[in-house]
Length: 113
Length: 116
Image (cartoon, rainbow over all chains, first blue to last red; front, top):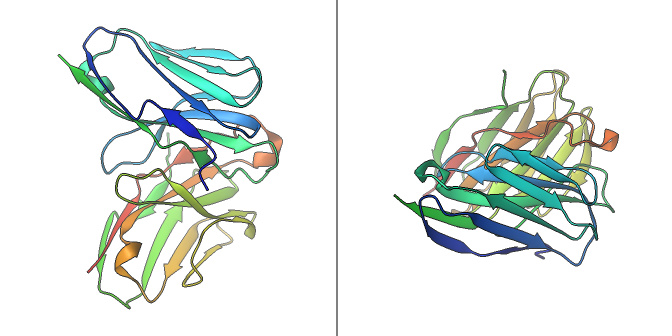
């Protein structure tokens, strides 16, 4: 069953606004990854987090690995039209060392110019 | 930089037919993963291989099988296809996940399988 809860499910924002999305779980994760997926394409890695409390930026994107190891958030600042897409969080459970990823349900982002 | 290569990109099969999907990992990556993504769904883990041995198994139907070859490429074989098998199938590769630090986990562009 689904072990990651991602919210919001969708967002429709104005260009230039900031965006925030998050993932929570009742399970403990060793790794949190944030991906962006365009229609018909594979997920593209945006940010990877490996330590509890870690805060990492990639351009206008910032993500944090929750201190409890059960959650993570992604912020996008000053959104632009090309930010449109589906954003997924994905994690590797502490109980697993095989690299299997569990995905959140995704957040669909639409940006109005 | 070299990425994960999947072939074919698109595949149309009839019910009860067989399909084979191929995945070529990033050079030096020894671990391969297969995921299935239905329309509007998140990717679901199917199976993984490390050094040519199966390392983990998810919700993969018995009609599906996979293997990793000596050159580290992997193939997903799907038999007795059903309409519900229509989906995007992604392959990903990484370095040994037990080493931590994600190992460069990278997805391919996927194979879109349509069963008619």
